Length: 121
Image 1 (tube, rainbow, N blue to C red):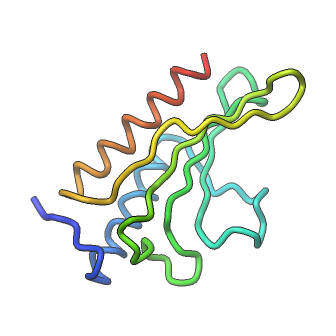
Image 2: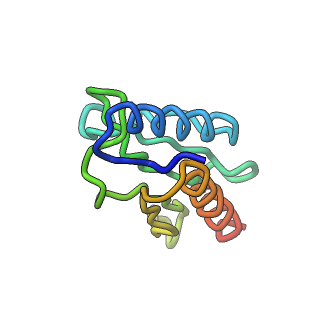
């Protein structure tokens, strides 16, 4: 197993690739509704039966470089979106630290997605 080093550009690019691959496998795609206002790739997946609900992942992957941001204090955020009283309602479900082994980071992302999905039921 390999430990992630935020100061290593190759590690940052590898983690970005791993995150995007994981999200694609789980049915996520890049959410274009944020337009040019976001510096990072934001991915989302709509709820299977209710398009007003979705899971959103703020990846910390820079659009400019395609690598995870160098700042190791920045976290991957998993948000659930629903409708409450006819207004969009957002709730952060998980903040994923980018520390430890690559697989550990990916497992924490999976756990956050599952938690968000369960809260949207």
